[in-house]
Image (cartoon, rainbow, N blue to C red; front, side):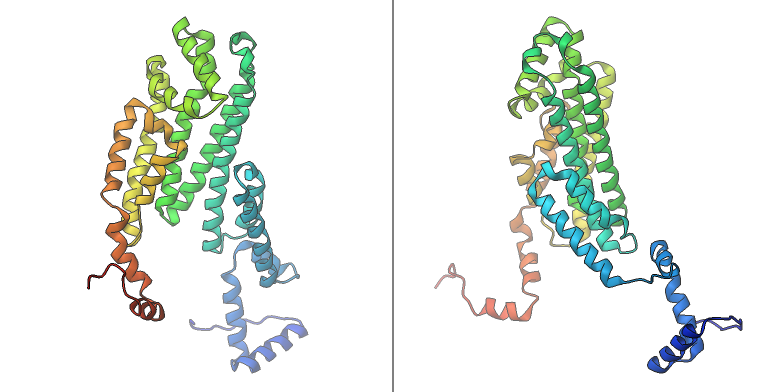
Length: 343
């Protein structure tokens, strides 16, 4: 502690009694007790300071109990699936807004909130598709374009919020999974933009483009198969302004996929990036825009090939060394013999 200077205060008798009790218990002078209590209080965040000076005091056990409750509800809602995105968001938001002074909790809930916004975007996109009556596709004048337009705008706002939350997290804790999610969200913005423009093609394009848009829109009611065809073939139907918008989405997506590699390398020496390749190639519909769009598909394949050069088997020795760092585990492991050892 720094040099102490004199200053007189009048305090209540209960406060004097408490200071004397603390000094006796912890073998400190009364001056040291006051000094350390004030310094401790100065390190509290604004919310806890307000609680301290309101007269109610701070009960950290109650706060932990609240966190456990809300995180448990959030986990339950999260694993129930994307349809529960708004419920999940509400639970994690409660914890997030009171946890800025606790970086670990704040970072985890920020990550999950970003995930919720991406799921909310997907639900709004589904709501837009559901708002169209398939029987009205033959008569574009009857299509509810205003609702279609507003729902896709809301979906894009949700994706922007997802990206914003993830970027806040990346500033304090770079992580390849968070970076991957940002890439997916940029790709989804491009895909949603194409889907949003389908009705405009129906209304204001030549017969060939309108017929193509009708086929794609009709297929969207059934499955994801239309997304691949839409992304592959659409460039023939784009104007310059739309091409510029999509370029931003595509380049941001690819840029984040490449940054993912650097962050995985800098984090530690045993992180596995091969699962990104397996996930992106097999069932990752969120990256459809860059997987199938002619302008970006080759760059996407290049990224996949980069991941292929870092298979799980290459880092297994470092992973196993980490696993063997526990002496009890290492002993039990060494007590066994590989069934592939040659006699």
